[in-house]
Length: 125
Image (cartoon, rainbow, N blue to C red; front, side, top):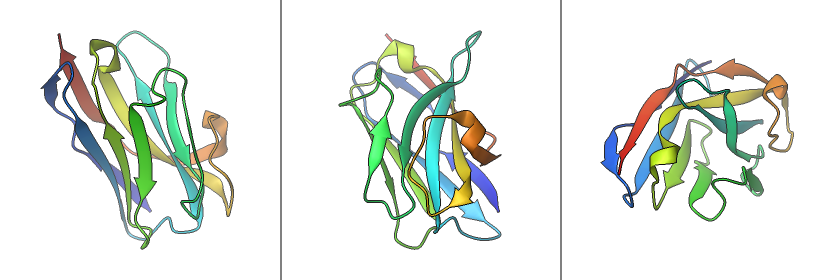
């Protein structure tokens, strides 16, 4: 399965944005999924994750209350709703699929074995 992110663009601080991650060549119905981001010159950072059924999610401390992760029922698309964008949200955003099926979402990169190429979000002040 190939993961393709979309929705990143240049926005202003305070704006909202929705990122999508679409699966091609299959689905990720039975896998937990996650979003990570990398700012220029920094390590990749955990943003959000959702369990395989979509019933539970968890978030990085820096995005709690502003970001919402969700997934469609068909296992084809993962979303990240971002509200109240800040300049420090600027970066490349990646979706990822866990290696194991039927698991909870996890903030640990090592638990993911399939990554998209990323979509760029730039927030101007």
